[in-house]
Length: 273
Ligand code: ZN
Image 1 (cartoon, protein in one colour):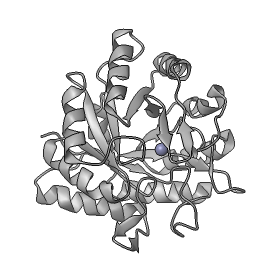
Image 2 (tube, helix red, strand yellow):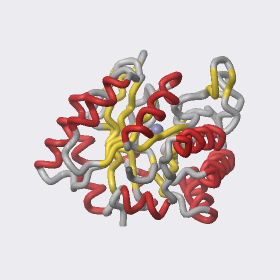
Image 3 (cartoon, protein in one colour):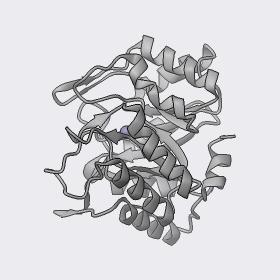
Image 4 (cartoon, helix red, strand yellow):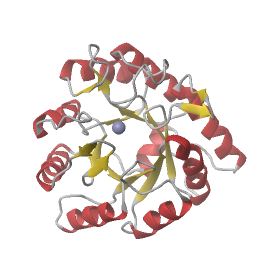
């Protein structure tokens, strides 16, 4: 099996301080939490930033710059910046593309729209085509976030049209209300229908995080952990840092005999330059 690529969803855009006092909010906190997760053994940092006034996600250039500069100054981590926008607010497409300015190695590419609780997470064809073209032009690899099986077909169609370049890298997002549930069957099905030669990783939301990560470790896939997706370490016990979630999956993977990829090894596995 290939070495394990560990990604971390450092903060996301929607978890609040009321839900957990440990969620990083300021640029300094987000950067620090990402750096600690990298030190613990993660190689990909998936980054959203927050508006210090509302505490929620923003696509603000200056705040992104502060976080990106700090992480680049102190780590060799692969940056995967978000293009998802803000929950409940449908931003201008151009605003969602702001993180591409920083020339990260990966950006998220949510391969379709999803009903998420009270909101519709809108990713219409015009946006996906624009994002695909911009990433191609800039040489940035899209991380294809898939919430249900039809989104794999969407990506395969874009591959055929030349809007996506092989090898594709999928991030299955399982356990979101409105998407596929976090079960072994969901993961098995998705891993079998992606185009040959693609790589994949999985995000299990909430209580799905640990089981999905463990199954991916044994199947030869890759994993994402972190506070964006799950704020608990165990039942009723909040996770205090992203690093402790990374440390746990490393312990488990090592017990299985699965080695952990460094950032440079992860670059080769994911086909990054
Ligand atoms: Zn995200």
